[in-house]
Length: 88
Image (cartoon, rainbow, N blue to C red; front, side):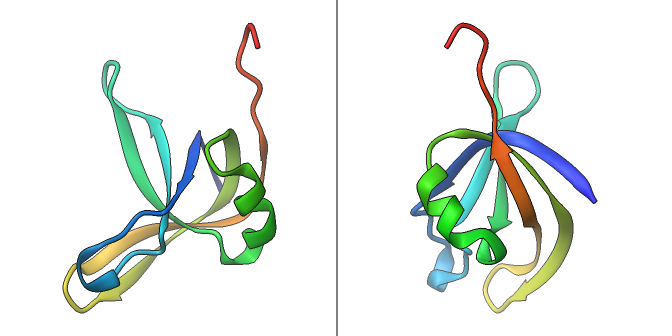
């Protein structure tokens, strides 16, 4: 099991609808954020409530084969919890 910490976002789309519709924005190099596509199907109700919030998620990376996008690495979330930013 691996962990990711970042901001959970919904409403995303891919070519031909080939996207889970969810991603986490995680810290990247420097001040840039990296978008990681995530599968929230196991925690859907909680994910909808936490959309736009900072969370830490546990899960595993899986490869999904899309027709247009080809093999794509997706983080399949098993569980997650909120993160509290310092000063908030």
